[in-house]
Amino acid sequence: MSSWPKPTQAPATSGLPEPTQAPAPPPVTTSKPASNLLLASAREQLQAGDTSRAAATLERALRIAPNDPYLWHELAQVRFAAGEWQQAIQLANKSRVLAGSDIELRNKNSDLIAAASERM
Image (tube, rainbow, N blue to C red; front, side, top):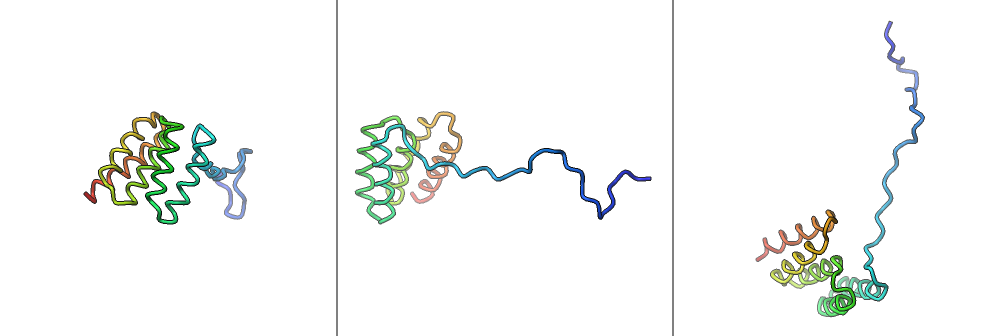
């Protein structure tokens, strides 16, 4: 006789909790509160299509936190949105170096570099 459960039987549970989806990652923040405010402001400016102001705002944030790879990545995205491909590549490369072991950010920078290179 087979030890397989009959089709009408529920499979035995292991007593382990059901797997759940991982929580959404928190919004990217920088290491300094002042640069967080500037980052939020730059994102609003970029969303409004004002790439010049967004870039200037991010440059201010970078004076506060010059080694923050997320700020460099954001500035690379702004330069990309403005069609400044070479500058976007240079900034994404800087972010990628500063990102260290942050694989997700390194991959985002690599994607941005590839996209900018295609447009040159």
